[in-house]
Image 1 (cartoon, rainbow, N blue to C red):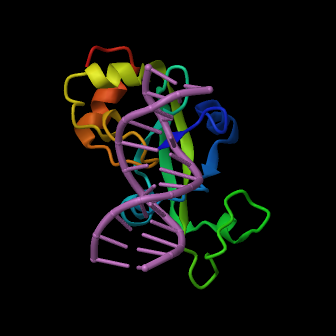
Image 2: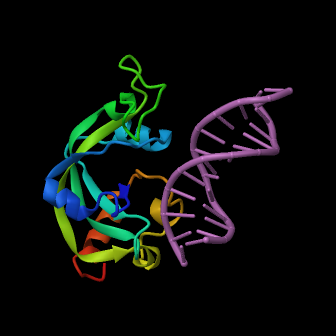
Image 3: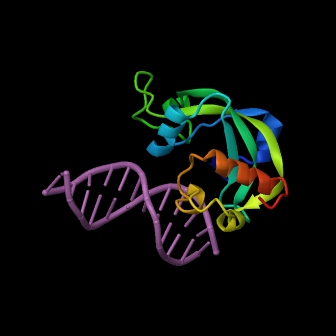
Length: 149
DNA sequence: GCCAACGTTGGC
DNA sequence: GCCAACGTTGGC
């Protein structure tokens, strides 16, 4: 899951313990949250538009998809006039802090790591929620733990 | 700040 | 249903 650290960083999640992942307004990302993410799923927490961009930590899904009611609040920056209680249109999950990675894993190192050639973030970086394979997840964690993966 | 990639919108 | 216009994202 990607976030701009200026807006919400891994340290914000650490402080809060857990948070609602509101504001996703892309259908592919929404579908992944709604249809694929399950309670207990591990999450790589990625800092985008950062210096450098990369994976900063690990999180976990603690609540499966439910309506993103921010879309129904006209005062929210995430308001969508087409969302309603009958058809919420957008969904969010709750995630909790697991850990900060001892070593930040930059996008550069993701791109050069063996085994991550097909990782979506190294190719189609715009999608804000992306599926990660078990192998990819383990390689990133190994890099983040300081290993050479 | 630039710009490429790409998703969305709306006219036809 | 096509596609041009437009808006957003995010790396650089």
